[in-house]
Amino acid sequence: ERKSLYKVAQLGGDGIGPEVIDAGVQVIHAAAKKLGTFSVDFNELDWSSDRYKKTGSYVPDDYIEVLKKHDAIFFGAVGAPDVPDHISLWGLRLAICQPHMYANVRRTRILPGTESPLRNCQPGDLDWCIVRENSEGEYAGHGGRSHRGLEHEVGTEVTIFTRTGIRRIARYAFQLAQSRPRKLLTYVTKSNAMRNGMVLWDEVINEVAKEFPDVTMDHMLVDAMTVRMTLHPKSLDTILATNLHADILSDLAAALAGSIGVAPTANIDPSRTMPSMFEPIHGSAFDITGMGLANPVATFWTACEMLDWLGEHEAAKLIMAATEQTCRDGVKTKDLGGSAGTKEVTDAVIQRIMAA
Ligand code: NAI
Ligand code: MG
Image (tube, rainbow, N blue to C red; front, side, top):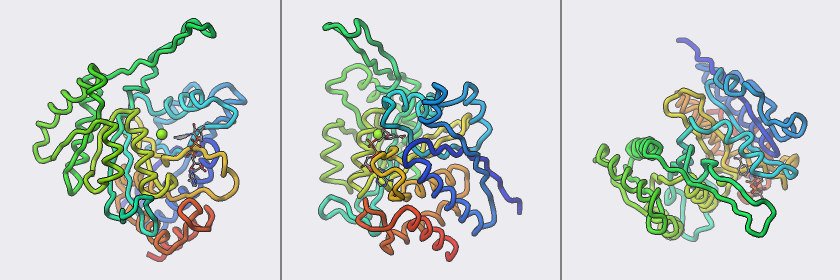
């Protein structure tokens, strides 16, 4: 049997990003060693706010060419206390993801040994997959500022929705819903107050729905969706929303499942033209940087998402099972009510991988 070799761009970024990505790399190497069927060659890139502060740019000019040489991108977080967030986000994360990685997929579940802040919500009651449109919408970057500093200064942020953009993300979300046991898709808009682009979403999604007769679909307005997620988490499975709406709903989802420190994200280019990018949902967390406290579980789950995308399903299952067992055994960081640090959790997961 031939051993597969993958080339992955390792982009820790800022703050706790490099800490959790290092832990993720160790865990992936452990799974590769245990299974012996594949290996991963990580190429560490120093693209970060430090690079920006030294050179004026987060990435080199030929960064797309550099990334294209990899099968996937394993990303930590970007954001520094002394760089405005819109500079860091556009300088690194959005520069990489837009426009190819149009599907942002965020799974949420209550892991064993983890408590939801919702009373009566047990593991199994909350198992969602949020699909976020990742290339246009409210974060298209369209807009401008005029009359700077004057009393009548104006700033516009133009939301861009295209039939092509909506159709491709809708098809992706329906396929994903179809692959899950419940075959249930809830799509979220705000087509009462926003009567142009959001109505286009409703129309295009209803057209695409005809291609997937076996998927049950329903529709929520985004404000009502926050209520349903909080009060009736069991009634949801796959969720589709715009860039802005899903950004907010997925943070809510992560918090309802117990902690932002466990939630993964996949930025997918379904055409596989560009390598897809995998990252924990959380940011660079300056408040705990360098203290060894960061929860690496979000990054382990992210590693599973990446391995699944690469076709290494057995490795993904192995890492996820070891991570869940570690949580069940109570080896948890502070954000989950435990007292372990990043290293203890990482070592515990590796030990369970090797013992599996
Ligand atoms: P954050 O996610 O970095 O932190 C929010 C809170 O959650 C903090 O109290 C932090 O300590 C805690 N937290 C986050 N991840 C954790 C983990 N793995 N283990 C334990 N606790 C964890 O969000 P915040 O504070 O709003 O943003 C900090 C910086 O990160 C900003 O510059 C922001 O722009 C950036 N950011 C970057 C993202 C990305 O690169 N994808 C996503 C979100 C924020
Ligand atoms: Mg967010």
